[in-house]
View 1: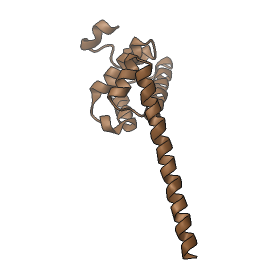
View 2: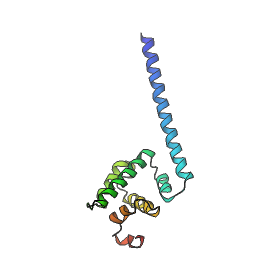
View 3: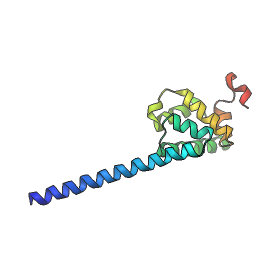
View 4: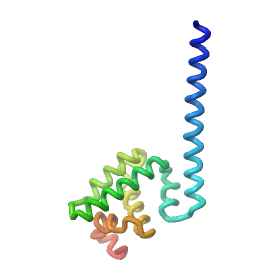
Length: 129
C-alpha cells in the first residue's frame, strides 16, 4: 500500500509539473506574440512584464470603463489606477503605467474615450486630445 501511495504522489507531482510547463509555454508564446505584433500597447505590455491573464483582465476593465462612460457614470483616474494595481500587483503605485497604457490604447484607436475621460483634462495631456 505504501508503494502505491508513493506512485500516486509521484504521478500527481508529474501532473503538476506538466501543468506548470504548459503555463510557462503559454506565457512565452504570449510574450513572443507581443514582440512579433509590434505596437505601442504590445511594447508596453512586454516592457512591464504583463501576463496574458492580466492583459485579458485589463481589456475587461477597459470595457467596463467604456460602458460606465457611455452610461454617463462618473469615472475617476484614481479608482481606475487602483483597479489596474489589483490586476497587476507588481505595478502597484505606478500611476505612470496606467497613464501610458490608456495613451497607448488611444493611439491604437482602442478605448479612446477611457483616456479622454480619465486623463484628458489634465494639463500635461491637453495636446493628446
